[in-house]
Image (cartoon, rainbow, N blue to C red; front, side, top):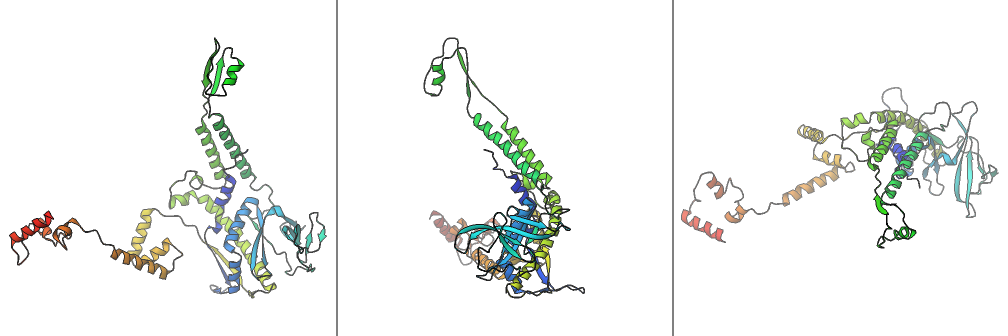
Length: 445
């Protein structure tokens, strides 16, 4: 009955994974020591990224690695369509063998697969890779024939283990850190226990408790079960109710304090982790997220190393399995986007006024800033439509225009306006008394 509705561990993981919150720019370049290397247009690589849903998969992989220390990325080609997929293998279904002289290097990697075999039956087995071969194992580790295909070739066509580990941070001495995040997991259970206590107290204190003094018969005690059943207390006996009162608000504050203390251990500020939420922007958010930005800088180094290794593996599998060739002389230039903090309203207004007045940007840029998916042509269509609608929207007929005719709404040019300014001249060619009679007739109508 443990109440784990407040998953602090999940929130910590999501708050600390920020590398892929903004779009990542990936370019293939030819290494050059002279000047800036220009990016190369390689449609084959662009297609592979699209087929693998690369940004989304890498963001998910980072969250898994933050939670479980590491996960494994395995690109593979689909024989049926020739497209590439990117599998994320979690540590609970993975087995790693490490080199004796280098505990950071994998010499064997196995992972659990489930699917239908050649006969259509659902099976579960292990696929085990080394640099030289790929074999299939049963649950006890005994080698078996390939249950999914008639292909009995056990040679590894890639010459390397086709898997890249994605660590949450750079390993120090060993491949695994078995104590990673255990404090956050324990903290999550502690919060669950405290929430369970509160739920129990709310339940037990939703009713008042009856109390008797003196000799009370069992008939009276049985009658209590029915609140509409009248009963008479024996002589000398009294009844009362006990109102239990616990400071639930104080307990709730204790829980929130513990939640914030746990979040602070991971560099998360109250502005990001507050249950109620605060309105903040600009400089205040940057100061509050300073610890997270330091974590982000370290995570960017790990992600860059992982993506470079993954690019080399994607190119190897693509070129080996018959895809459109990705040239071997290209390298990946990786650049993640930077996190921007929303400015205050007055800062935003001042910026746009400055850029409009100095001809730096126009209304088209403003619409695109509000909706980055718009093209300039689409923004122009929207702007023209707004202007067209604004011209068609006319103000309702005013009382002055109803009484004095067309143009009466403009007091500076109407007869009413001239009267207000002290001029009492009738229109040229008319008699003042006739004009007055017409005015009275209009007012009566």
